[in-house]
Image (tube, rainbow, N blue to C red):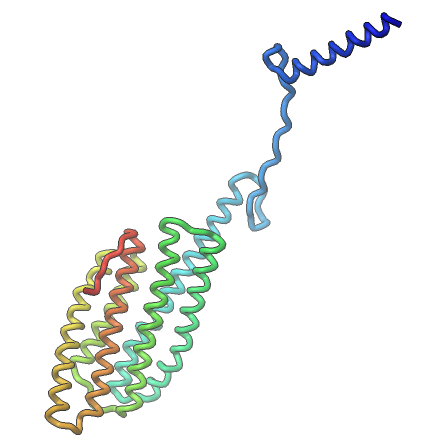
Length: 272
């Protein structure tokens, strides 16, 4: 019986020693190999293998495509707005009420485009959490869409003047203002496409010309109204047109500032 007990005790001590040796590498025994942890699954579109890194590349590729679509939407909106500005003044100069009505109706399209761009940007920020240059692309799209929407509103206001003054003569300086403002919008969009800061900065000089024309137009119209009160109705509406065009030019410089920020990450005031 004592031999059996001794043997049992010896066996327990031996087993305990083996457990300690297993737990303590310093006793000369290697610890048992650990089972490899299962890899964290990557987010994929469902068509790729589960190889690490492949899903990340796919997600990045999809995000880049979304950025490209976003920028194309901004350009499409900008093209429509630029056309509206030119057509509004052309309708005013020619007394084209049909064209004026088309511009007014087109404002709903521009408003919807602005809302769509803003919604798309907010979704990208929430779902993709962009940083650095990608975040600047998204935030710039929101800012530019807002400026473009306001420019379209001014074009609509000019079109409404057409319906009120019924084809009465237009000052040459107003036509010149409209030409410059439309060109500024075109240049701002060109700078956006090319990521060209120099093109964007030229908008500051163009805005100075528009401001000078605006001051001269205001002086001329005030003089006309003082000399002939019968011109007050017509001249007052032309004052409104000049104001709208001056604001269009200001928004165009805002577009240029957005381009500078997009490319360089710096804020630079172009409208002084």
